[in-house]
Length: 413
Image (cartoon, rainbow, N blue to C red):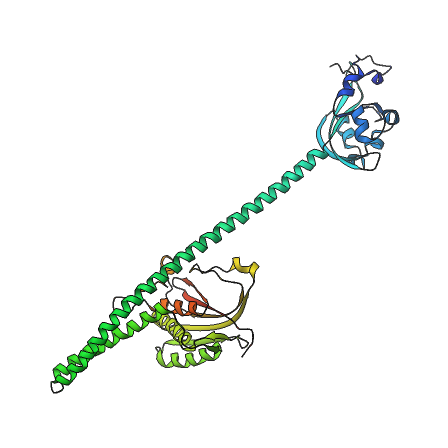
């Protein structure tokens, strides 16, 4: 194979063909050649521009003293590879120019042989890749920004979907509340008339024991219907009639006394109350009623007996931690301080496919005649009316926990 070199490459022992130096000088990459001892014997214009050394200065210098490459710090890896008979292509390294500036370069090296195949030197071609590296860094930065933007968009879309679901749920509850309120008012008027006529009828049959029994049963059934209407109205209105500062621990201890007297003997009541609990503002009767409802529901989920645990704790929700708080009811928690009441049972749990329906009015899994489906919807309404949030976690066969979040007041009671 014939190697073409400029006149400066001529070796006294070997004859080589010559190519005009202008051709190598016109190459846009830096080109220099060395003898076998790595002394520079050719140096083109681009090599001058990149290294800062003039041709007259570089000729005769060792390669490592001109390019000051990282590859030259301990041992010339290029010479080592070339001595093994291999060429090297596209090696990325850094060089230090005459002004002390470090530049990233891409290096290619080849053996220089004469016609007889004897190595007479080395040819080195390298290019400054500062602009390319800067462009790559900008592209990498742009990619990172794009990934972060894409992540932000995904989170925003997720939040938008949750907001949409929450809006749909709110509109549905509001519509059902209006409907329930309208029906309840009309039905209540009818029941008032029925009760009035029953009262008159009792006077007419006061000496007829059989008729009195029938009237008493009718009156009892009508009063049950009136109680149901009262619940429907309470759900529809969601109003608080008595506002005061409440210590939930004291309220729950009073509730526990009632529960032990009311619930089945095979139901164990456990309390885990934070002694430093913050107070809340609200209607203690409604909150008492909501917690009592949850405990009765818990008893129904444990026909063979079990444990009900009521726990209180203070919790502060910071803006950056909102993503970690997700409600199954699609409610959106606002940053702030809350008092959280957790009511847990060891019952049969709630199937995943119906967990998003448990707060719907008139939804029940109980047998016909055993439940109105208003209990949990009333709890939901009471918590919401107090500016709070409700959530649940349930696993079939492992029990259910309801979490009630109430906005806390700053001062302790």
